Length: 99
Image 1 (tube, rainbow, N blue to C red):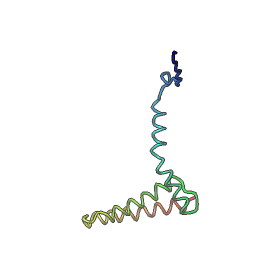
Image 2: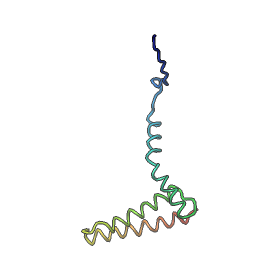
Image 3: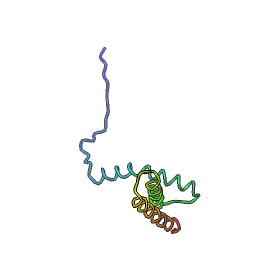
Image 4: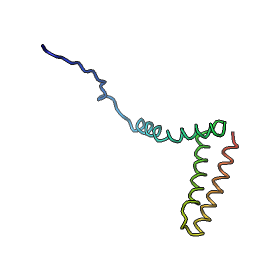
């Protein structure tokens, strides 16, 4: 008895993968955590948050932790981190108040 198996597959050899298509798929993949964070912020703040506002909130958090975590930084670097934090906080406040 002879056994025959038929396997079908999509032929992708003729399909061209352009640089723009590759960049688009990479940017969608890379922005997934930020989109999930935007949904989280929206649920916590009980209003819709744009991606721009999400990036502002992330910047404030990074600036805060940059000034807090490194315990052996000099005073000058701590002042620089504090200035960045205040600047980021003001930009975030403006971004969140704009609708």
